[in-house]
Amino acid sequence: MLGLPDAATLFRSALLLSALLAVVVVFALDRPRGRWGGRLRSRFVLGVPWGTLVSVGVVLAVYLFVQGGWDHWYAPVTIPFRAWSYFYPLGMVTAGFAHSGPGHLLGNLVGTVVLAPLAEYAWGHFPRKRGSQTFTSPLTDPYVRAFVIFPGAVVAVGLFTAAFAIGPVIGFSGVVFAFAGFALVRYPITAVVAVTAGNGVRTLYAAFRNPTVSASAGPSYSSPWWADIAIQGHAIGLLAGILLGVWVVRRQATERPSAARVAVGVVLFSVAQSLWAVYWYRGGETYVLYRAAGFALVILLATLVAGTVAASARPLVSMPERPDAVRAVPRWRIGATVLLLCTAALAGPAVPVNLMTAQSGDLPGQDDPITVRGYEVTYAEDVPNGMVSVVDVEAFGETTRVNTSGVIVRNRDRGIWMTAVSKGRLDFTGTTRVRLGGVGWRDSVRVQRTGWNAIGGGTVYRVRLSHDGRNVTAYTSPSVRADPVIAGRNVSVEATRTGFRLNVSLGNRSATGPMPAVNETASIGGLEFANAEGRVYAINGATRVRVARRETYE
Image (cartoon, rainbow, N blue to C red; front, side):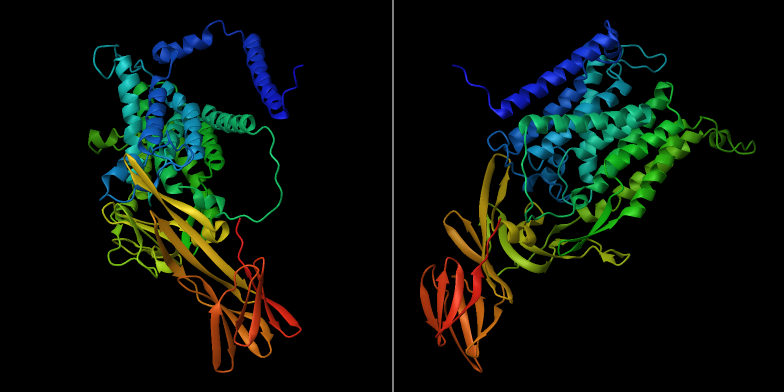
């Protein structure tokens, strides 16, 4: 007797059947009779956006074979493939195409699949400029345009966004935003619909992968959602795409969308993709969001793009007394020049930032760092960020020089200095691994925090690093005193390189002893201490007071 499938299988089947039914019904009602294929074949070789597929293949190849995602899909190597500085070419070349994990990768690939074909369709494999003939030159050969020029432009934009993005960026999102900018110039409303379609595809994938999700309230650690957005990199990618789109549309002499459609499209896209989320990192896991200023910038950008796309070719001012070369400058080029200047203003600050190098000298920390093939790993708190900038910028009460706390990774040869795991995240998880590596190799360092909460007095902890049989205590926090006073004695908890101990003080006298193991007792400074499943009690005659408990993690 056949059993019924489980609930997850039933939900997945229902999802697939509903999607298939929707496609069949729409196709039957529209009855395209080859119209859709005909339109695609008029712009694409065999009706296929080959440039998009090649670009997707490049990004996948970097993730699978360069970052090691083939063998470690959920744990690729990321540190060496970020855009650290101009002194580390490998990072600059790979950063625009590498990803931090499968979620990051799939999100950008979905964005590419829904937006890149629009940009490729607007450009076309078959040139549309008047007088152009197919196959007469490499620039007009549809196969060259599909398999070489479009993917080449994608790679160029990826290199541009990595080179002029602020900070050690990673990801293809700058290019995805360039696809969007290109599409917004020619098909603004369609581009917004494509973004919505991309969100639908992500939701469909999530629903198929996890048909049902149960959750309950509980503690969690996360930075503000807007602090994880590479806003500057996204913005320069969008502007680069807009400039390329304006150039192509003007060269093709095709019908242009109205200013209203472009303005609405840019605003809706920018809001949907959170381009208004302008923020700054203040240090100590504190971020500042300039929401009003960011939204104002979005509106100004939409106005400028709309004016550039819809403007005529007539000169802005007719001045017969001036030379013809001056009078012949069309209005749209003025807008394009302003857009170019805006792109330069956004990209320019990245130059001094990317002229950084790893701080020389000893790393902070209470023990020698773990060293793995040029990487140094340690832990420190409230120390200056070790990426040394050419300039120190201060404005609006903020500064480019900030302190940091957490697991620090440095590689002098690669110009790397980063807080790989923040103090707050390690406080929450307790144990993590820092993945190191390069092309063709990977390794990891285990990081573990253990601690005790002194009742009413805070937490004392130590951080240990482990790799290949070597264990070091990278950090021990200051001692903390528990609130309870027993028989006139104060009890403090202290962290040492080898473990934890209790300090019992009475007046000017004190005595120390190791923290008792679980279900054991110890006599220190005239008090008896008992460890009951991670809860430590001080005992004096009939008095029994809890003074500490072992720190727990999620």
